[in-house]
Amino acid sequence: MKMRFAALATLLLSPLMTAPGTAASLPDRVDTPAIHSPKALQEPVLALAAAGQRVVAAGVRGHVFWSDDQGEQWQQADVPVSSDLTDVFFVSPQRGWAVGHDGVVLRTDDGGATWQRQLDGHAIAALYAARADTLQDDDPELARRYRAYAEQGLNQSLLTAYFDNENEGYVAGAYNLLLRTEDGGEHWTPWLEQVDNPGALHLYGMRRIGGQLYMAGEQGLLLRQAAPDAGFDALTSPYGGTWFGLAGYDDVLLVYGLRGNVWVSHDQGASWQASALDSHAAITGASVLPAGDILLVSQSGVLFRSSDRAHSFSPVSLPVRFSFFDVLALSADRVVVAGLSGLRTLPLPGRARGEQ
Image 1: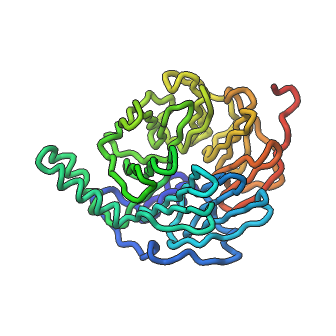
Image 2: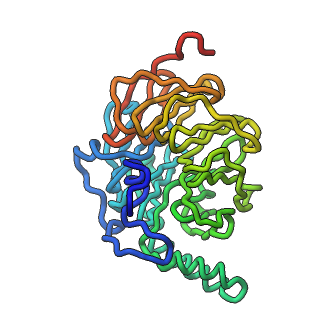
């Protein structure tokens, strides 16, 4: 697969990823546990999450790390797969999920120290095949679409996860891949037809903000769940390029993506304003401080901060610089960043003079 978004795309989308119906042969990463190694901390890390006071990070080759001292020391978790992991999400200090390539869904019940596989591409293919069979008589076209996914076998890429509680949640990814669970991941329901995404565009981010559940994806795709348990309807997007994620709180809804595009809405996506941010690099991760300041990181290794409800962002001076993929605020003056060179815990300078 030709590289599409420089280093970021190389990590977010597997080089073996193909469109539905053109399955590729993949190695048995889902049956090979991640290797414990001190060098693992130097490899790319794609996602960060807080599990209570613990920090959990996930990245390539099934590597998951956790820290109980704000990133001063990291422990490597026991993970039953060596697939690249693209997102991690916790609903409590103990329970969380990680997702990645090969259709992998992992769950932890001990704060990220050990993980169990709940789903993989083979299981997703079986779910889609069964769904196709039930739809064959009533909706042959939708059944055909489900069958095309089923033919992918292991070759499924999950890119984001979101859970409302310990039972109810979603995992989503490439080519409109979306599954829902109501029992903590013991069982999954395909939700292909529940998404207003006729082009089967990739789904990169999913978060609940201000009580509404949103998804963001490629080619300007923005979606909002119409009501609890309902499908996802498309919103008018202010930008036609790829969105990598969402962040915000209350009535501050922020989307960020390629070419330094950052837009904010204060009316649940009905209208948008461009945030002032001096960058043409992809914005790849976000974190919200308790006081409401918003942090963003870029593929070019810059950290940005907003103290005015995301109307503008200013660069923050950091002692290191490498390609960043995610950021997590640990406190008002400390952050951890994840990226191409692994993990770093860094000081967060205070607001610039004159900021509110």
